[in-house]
Image (cartoon, rainbow, N blue to C red; front, side, top):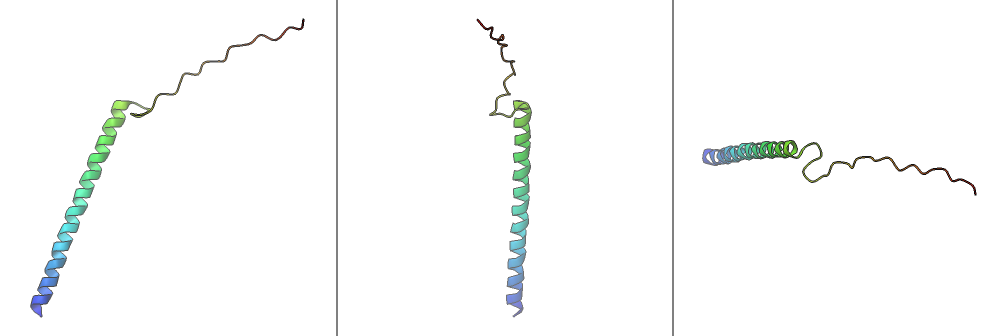
Length: 69
């Protein structure tokens, strides 16, 4: 009976260890991804890597009023 309990507790410890390692790996990957995103944002400027800046607004040409003939 004590062997069974020890075996079950050992499995739980093993499972817990892997859960902690998996959580640490996920946090590291998230950190690396956010660092990469930040570098891309800094390099690409305020509009992002795949976006163009908005076009400059040019006023429409003024059309003189029509004169009656």
